[in-house]
Length: 103
Image 1: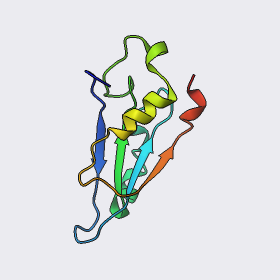
Image 2 (image 1 turned 90 degrees about the vertical axis):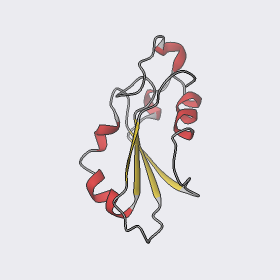
Image 3 (image 1 turned 30 degrees about the horizontal axis):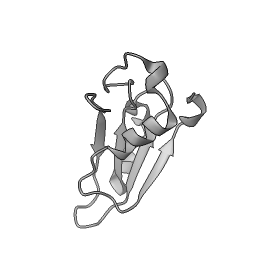
């Protein structure tokens, strides 16, 4: 994503004295991280929840040539760059049929 911005939101309402696991919620094609809005309040009480907007979608930088910019490796690379402080040793990845729409 050189020169582009990948938008994400971190929801963390866990007890500060407890080390919570991280969940990354990936939305489906033509959606945004807001897709998970109704699940975040519950999950964020027990987990650190990260909701990114995949490249070209939601509040992330729009794509000028989606046919060339969209691929499974590009999406995985984007997710790997989501800043997490402190970086989780392990995380749970949940997706809404995102792989089914990849070219």
